[in-house]
Image 1 (cartoon, rainbow, N blue to C red):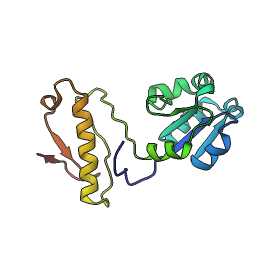
Image 2: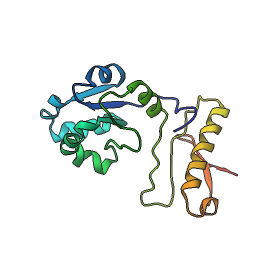
Image 3: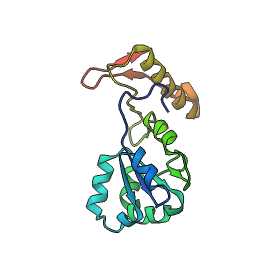
Image 4: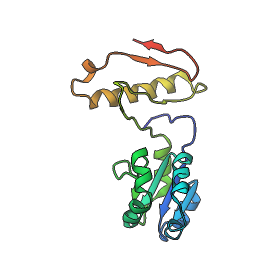
Length: 167
């Protein structure tokens, strides 16, 4: 979770039952209820993964969510994760969850021995960007076995700019 946010809103889709339907419609960008699950095709589910950054599911319908969305969400890393707080009980406070997910980034190391992450926008102040960068760096370093001895270098790059080494 970044302390100063990303500078843009994340899109969130709620996969809920009737208990959270009204709250989800007011807080999230899109809401799907149990009755909507049966109408979806595999093509619709693939489109959902492209349109939304996070999916929040209600805990008591998680088995149905896994059955309908699991084969598409799983390989793309979009499945609602209880560790990230995306699986909520039927009486959850969705406003706090939306605020927390709005400043959350996901780091994944796939094949290359390198991590890339968006930590802000160019129009953010330097202090805010520095705080976000330090937060990401410290969380990555603390998760490594030999901590800073495993980090060869850090570079900062704008979207279409050349990378700049950070000392």
